[in-house]
Length: 183
Ligand code: NI
Image (cartoon, rainbow, N blue to C red; front, side):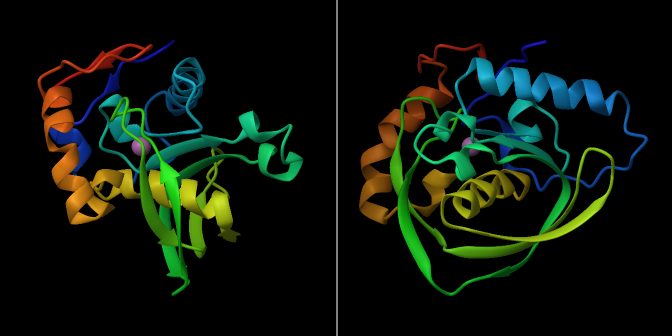
């Protein structure tokens, strides 16, 4: 089932999400629905707060990059109760967008490398290191669990320039090719 994506201005996007346990109701259905919703919206990552649920669950599938970079394109994960353990001091700037902030793309600095602990869909624990674009996407989705959005991280000048466009999204005036829920 395709779920509506909550857009900028919804309070759920600013909450610190809560951990869940393996008996969370209909967890596998929710995970399937999140992947379907993400594919339908042509995104590569989606966090539960973006479908209105303040829980520590995120999905990523970098399949659209398969042709350019098979290793990157093979990266598909479900992360439950993720916790970033370490971030490199070295940062890299790269362009990001977000399904909750339709039409806006900005350069965002991110740690080049991270170490993260999480549970997969079977509640098996993983501790892994990611770098480059994988690290960027994981950090973007992880930020959603902390109530942070990529537009918080742009330079003050860029933020000023984005202000009216963000206000339009809050007012429900943004257009997207997928179903959204404005504040
Ligand atoms: Ni996002």
